[in-house]
Length: 260
Image (cartoon, rainbow, N blue to C red; front, side, top):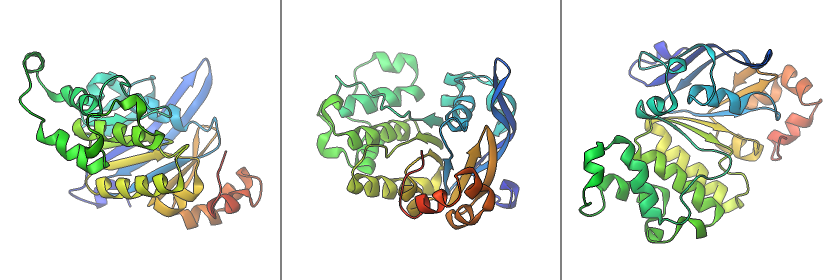
């Protein structure tokens, strides 16, 4: 089913995306349809091209092909222009302002969509969209705490909150649950399910137990290409995927382990 078969839903259509470094194709002719309302996971071994793919879609590296979102080709846009289109991302290491409070981090992130002259004036209270983000990511009680002393999982939730106040309709999350406790992983999964109904969420992930529990769609990448796409069950049963991951290793991983 293509995005055009689901009228009214937001989507990002990637066609023939290629990223090349000195003759090496880190991403090689990738086609993807990323559809609103689905938790879409990218998996694959280190070096498969997952992060480079996201880098190209968010303007951090150049690429060829096409990535259409709201009639705009993302590959022709600068990173700040892509943010203003409503596309945001997180990184493997949380990039919050550690010396500032949770509230201040969210307020700064929300400035992406405020006019420059308005940012110069004094603020009157906490904007409603900041309050909503605090509540959504479960950090209301920690609003005045410096971000640097938050627990690891809480920093990741703050980053997701920073995307919410930017009104990001497409979110790329890079190994969001890495280093989290089992409880934090479950809370993160439920958070993504809640906010994903009205957004397009793509998660790069190695924690296969998390993928198995929360993925609607899984795209397997290998050597810069899409090896297959489908449900977790379809991925687990695919002979090509099993071969890439050395026999039954992928089956074991999808039953609760991790994929390096």
